[in-house]
Image (cartoon, rainbow, N blue to C red; front, side):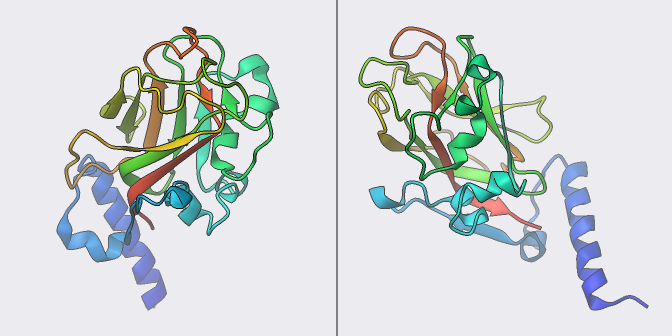
Length: 219
């Protein structure tokens, strides 16, 4: 009584269980069932936020959070205010002053994307600074990008130290992943963590938008 539709679903279940058991060891034999989609940044500044999040939202990046396709969480939220909720970073087209993520003044603050049943191998990422505060405000300048599949073991994929690319209001920049990633480096969780003080010499951590480019394994 097995139908083709049911068999296709079972194959995907078997494949993802295989990935889990093999510690995310990628095998070229499964590339067809893995449905790998690659979205690279084309160096056009107009496309800095047309990456994986935009793709999953079918052009409406905010919908990935609204429809629970991707979860966005953070180590803390300033005053626990909705105005500084981490979900704002997936709303690429909002320009209001109350639509940026901002943490409490705590060292090593972070923001995390959980891609749930998908896994991502990033090649670059774009950040847009707060919609408030000019040069010298609490814009990030030192951070790492980390990947994990269990939220316990983290691999550093990229690191920046006193990078002033975001030191102004509503400016954006695309950053290439500096560490060489292997064919098996697909991650459910991508985390950006501040590892030094802001331009203003404090530990508030935040920005208005965060987009990733690279390859994504979909069900």
